[in-house]
Length: 287
Ligand SMILES: [Zn+2]
Image (cartoon, rainbow, N blue to C red; front, side, top):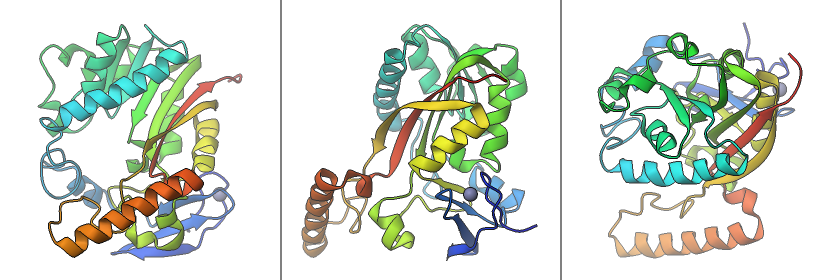
């Protein structure tokens, strides 16, 4: 077995390494990926207890402090789905974590369900939401077929996102909407100095899509055409003290310059400053 592109099957050379992981690139598809695929135990260790609440991988306090942030994200994403005429639809949120988006979608009138395999996240499910939330796709299938399938910050984590999209398509109506958010390459960090982009984080993230390669993946996996793309996240500064927590005067001064340069670049060449994009795609061809 060699490193072959998920989309075009060409052999792909290593672009750079991060720790023990090699990141390969298909220049034709603008797709990057970790190869060899990390062993299951390395991936499972990422999602052990503490992923949603610890200081290592993942989230610092997903279930508490980040609830308010989750609601703000839900509002933006539900507004986009409403604008595509989806309101009231039967929706499946894949990788739903604590189920916040499912709760927010229900409050908006969607018939929403969620799937989340992490036991830590499942323990945070509210009693009210529990009947709509499941541990695996097989359990969710009984609630389909779905009009809308969402996967927020999920596809980059999966061993085979093409196979997962194909499985999801089989649970969806022929004209279903697929909505995903992923980190995207193409910004100035990924172009010039990939080690400085914090979304290159194997084995937590295994796939690194551009807007072009995500469009191709949605076409290949879900038979879906992208109707709408929104910037989901463009960081405040690109190179210096990304968390903005330093109190050292020199660091703060350099970060201010970095932030100003970032805002200027965003006005002049926006694609160089984008870290994450939301894609809304509609399935539209015969099976
Ligand atoms: Zn390719």
